[in-house]
Image (cartoon, rainbow, N blue to C red; front, side):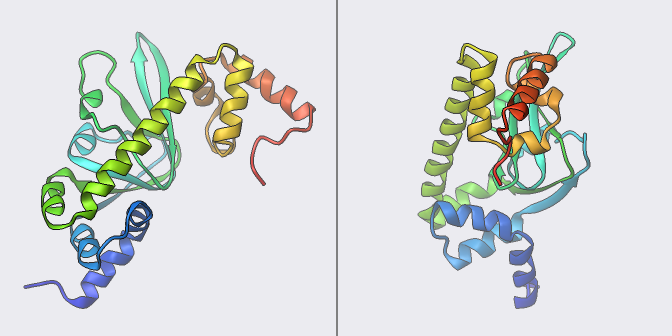
Length: 211
C-alpha cells in the first residue's frame, strides 16, 4: 500500500534538519525531499557511544543534534582528529578511513546525539532522477575540503598559543561543549598547556565563546 499524505508529511517533519541542510546547498524539488525522507534512518547515541563502522561505510550520516569527535589510537594513546557539532555531515568522501588496518578513525558521541542516515545506495537513483544531486555532491566535496584544509592549518601552526587562538576564532562553541582532554588532543598540546592558556585568556578578560 502506498504511503498516505499524512505519513509522507510525518517523514518530512522528522528529517527536516537534514533536508534544511541539503536545501542550503541547492534548492530541492519537493519529490526529491519525499524520496530522501522515505529512506533516511534516525538513530540516537548516548554520551560516549561509538558510531558503528558499517553505518559510516554505508550511509551519509548527518549530525542533527549533539557533538561528535573522531579519534585514532596510536599505541595506547587516544588522539582526537576531528570534532563536529550539529548541522554537519560526518566522515569523509573516503570510507576507507574507517576500516584501514593502521589508525582507523572511530567516531564517538561527546554529548547525546541524534543522527540522520541516508543510505549511499539511494544516491545513484537520486543522481539519475534529480540534477540537484550532482550539485550536492560537488558542494559537499567543497565542504570536506574546507574542513580538511582548516584542520591541516591548525595542526601546523608552530605554537600552542597560535593553535588555541585559531580554534577560538573559528570554532568558539567547542570551548563550551567539548571536554578539555579532547580539545587538548585536537590542538596537539598537553592538557596542562591548554588549561594554562585558558586561564591566561580569562585573566585578560577575553571570552572563550561568542555571546
